[in-house]
Image 1: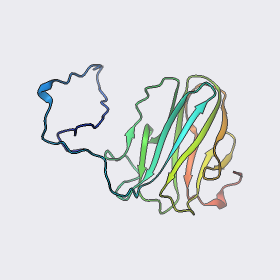
Image 2: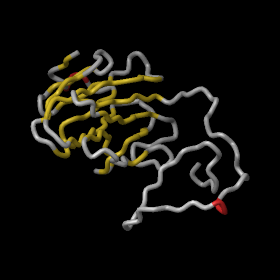
Image 3: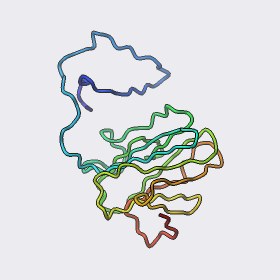
Image 4: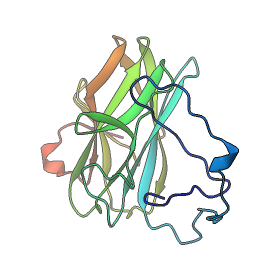
Length: 193
């Protein structure tokens, strides 16, 4: 709905404020019946996408979405990419575009090797689990590998239910994990499935 002045009935939305603004007031005068179209599409979804979840034994959970769409770019697309609003100070999982965290990253079509940097923020050290979920509209031949740079491992996300790993020091981790789509396998040395 970028460029549209009205939010249709029943549609949720987020607001990100700047300069210390913490309250937004909506009044009855702002209501309108000009655009009352529900925004859920009935079209067949042809976007290639998958979700990556992170959890720990204490039940902390977070998720990021990576997708590929015909009219998206590999940079920031205001129509498709969504900055990460870190509402949970204990855990956050996100992809990284131009050194900024994103909860949704949509890239151009997957017709060659692509890499997505993954960031994770944790409030405490310990054991964590990545769980890939809902591989939608990918070719069977599409290779999707998680690289754990700390352990020098490559994990085939299409062949596992989960990937267990340990974070020794709490904090912001932006240089450990990369997801590779259709990588050149001749450059990978340790593949775990």
